[in-house]
Image (cartoon, rainbow over all chains, first blue to last red; front, top):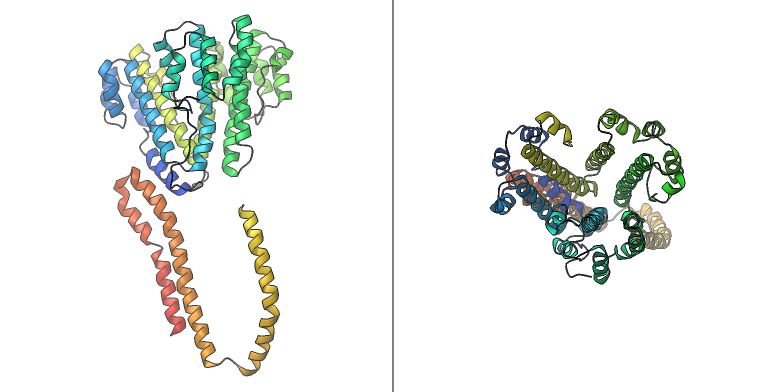
Length: 365
Length: 108
């Protein structure tokens, strides 16, 4: 294993389940997050210069100062936001109690999968190292240095070999998908193996425990359901048959069983899938954006709506138990959501996107 | 781990009580006939006053430990609310004062 990929552990001196200090501190940090009306105000700014000026009055100032040395474009603002997110997550993990650090570490493991997939896709599409690095978010167990090491590899095979040499937990899944990749040149099997590895590992790590572990399992289950649901839409769009679709099913969801998934995947059309989802927790969420989907004809519309649903759900969990893991999870999600919104605003302003459309793109909770 | 410890504690206390109960019942019967002596009353009062003071102090200590850790967390991020935290930290002292008053009333 590379020296920087150490598992997260609690700070010495903080009791394993002492949530008083952790949660009180996180509530203090949450009070400093940007409010909804402030973000809407940012979206109305005519140029990037004004946005930078306003952000300099917030806790993003030190990161902006560092990133803006290279220029004053949306890319530099994005880099500053990324730096701030990574710094904030590192700070939070520095004072979290042991149980919260373990649970949040498992949940954030999905970012390791996201980052590895980004590197693999970038290498497969022959993107430059800088272009790949722009899309990475080192908030999981893999640090910036680890990801830089992976990005520096010349091709997909070398990325897999490096992951194996480092002994990354994802290495077996990568090796499993490599055989098929070398035969077909497609990354889908490798990505599927990674997703399956994450779902199985996280479920195992959260299998036993108290109500905090149960809460994390619920979040994980909703994430898995969302991935399965998106796969159902992709299968319908690609006209794959149900037996082929079964290969892509991820275990560990809460609402979408393998039978439901099979039934939905057998449907040929998005409208039928939406009808089939009526009565489930995802039905109303997807119904709401059905018109937007008809206009855009893009599954990204559903992806965005489901991500929005998950974000709201996790943030709502923060209000349930004042001495539970809900508050740390809700803070991590809120912070990520804030940074995502600011990145959208910065890019939107730079590209001259109309204010109303920009506001529609934000997830405001 | 906690369940195991609790089970051990419950088993131990049941064992002690099963031995002590008949002895105490027998002593009580003998006592009822004679009534408490002056030194017994004094000892009883002193024990009750000690318990009132000691248990209330333990309760306050527990509350202050919890408030203290949460307060430290809040102060690390929002030093402007320090007055509130100090006030909250001092509140459980009332429990000790009540225990103290109870102890005086018992022993007096």
